[in-house]
Image (cartoon, rainbow, N blue to C red; front, side, top):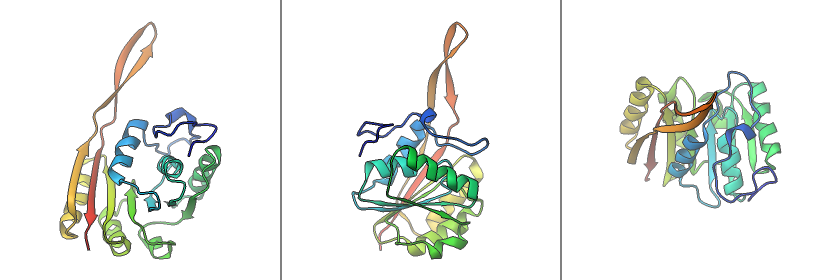
Length: 200
């Protein structure tokens, strides 16, 4: 459902349209598109976004699925308020922001999820194991990894949890940038996107 700030049906909101805070990560537009594709959201899906940061995924999914429910988990109060402001900017009404640290807060979240996006959290293996308990059958988990240690930890956790249909994608995105009188391509930091399903 389009908003005044993003009056389009397609996802891929320009990065500069989001309000930001120094040092708080923002999922770049192209990475966001890959994440959303891997989530395979359905019209009435419940999505948990753990480590929601700036709130780009909740905003995009909220606009795409106005009848779905998005629970954005963020431990820092200031960052949680940033997510709320970005939801207000884009007139998104179906996002609930929960202030808390994963995995401790997960047992208190409303509505078991059909989809889970994990964009942060150092105890990634513990978070994944806890998430798996609440994930509904046929549910999907999508997690990002910016280094080999996290990539290994998520892969190992999926194996231990007997996740099915596991996929791993590494982004390779370059953007055209103007520098003085010339234009050149600058790489967006590559990231691994891992997804797996719970079949029972």
